Length: 422
Image 1 (cartoon, rainbow, N blue to C red):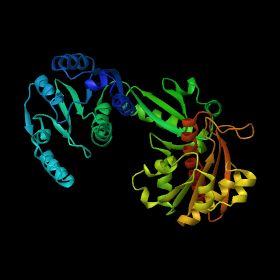
Image 2: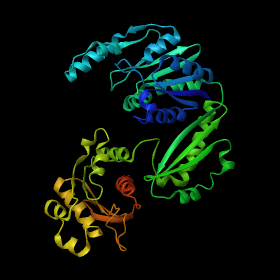
Image 3: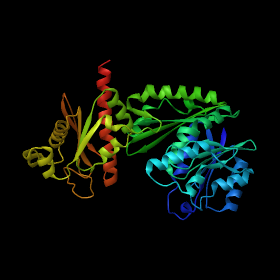
Image 4: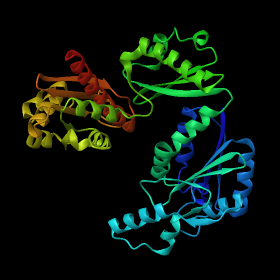
């Protein structure tokens, strides 16, 4: 396995000013392709201490991934420290300078000297393109080991890792002559952890042999993590195929997606492929469903809009729910959810309408309708249906679980429709 260490640099991490999410995400990314993370360190912006940490980590690692310290200010010293460590000099990278010029012109911001210095990278390094920010990533080979350096901004770090560094790291791992463990995640929904484990009883220790499988539940469902072992990388890939095939055979109907893809992304692809549109009407989730759906790039192709109808008055006067429906059945009811879904679909002229109405808490629950009671409605050209869900008893849990449940409900409806059309 490719022994890998991760080093986060920045005083802001040590004093608790920011949370170090980069190390966790980097570890997850590289582990999936066969790296073995042997150490994760955090250190401040101090030259001598960073040099010592580089020595310590490269002594136990084949690959070192550094995050942080590539910005334009005086406390960003990672590039210079790396140059000193590998006995190199900083030179201007013409490709990156052109990128900076265009980026600052586009934003109508002057390109001041400290920003121009971000085009300086060690002369023997390979530039790792950063499509988001102004600091490039770098790959340096040193005494048979490899060092990857990325900016500290999480979005930039993860973009560089996934889009540029990961293919390189994958090749390093594949070319390693030692044993390998590669990982894959299946994201499931609609089945509790205990029931899922019972359905997968055949995938026992004997079946797995030296491989592994873990259950990771959260508010959206259960993530199945498979760790496939092989004496070589190629053998690990074959083992992954064997185990994955069995898992799909046993619980495929509950699998929403693989890897770290969001449920909203899966829904977006289905809506795009079927050329359908969506509108939403939300009450207790306060716009979170619309926010989750529009977090997907290109969502304007299928998402028309939504209505935040928190009060009964807005449900009636703006959305068009009948007053007698709320008076007779209440806002948290099948009847109200169905009308909300149907009305928002009509108003936006969408193919599908989703509605959410419920009690997020901590107050407002009754014996008949306790906190966590949520009705989710879906309307299409064939009519409207609604389902009641119990989404927990803590406010944020209820809201988060509700939006994921609503998305999965429409995913399942679309998949059923597509299967019928085959």
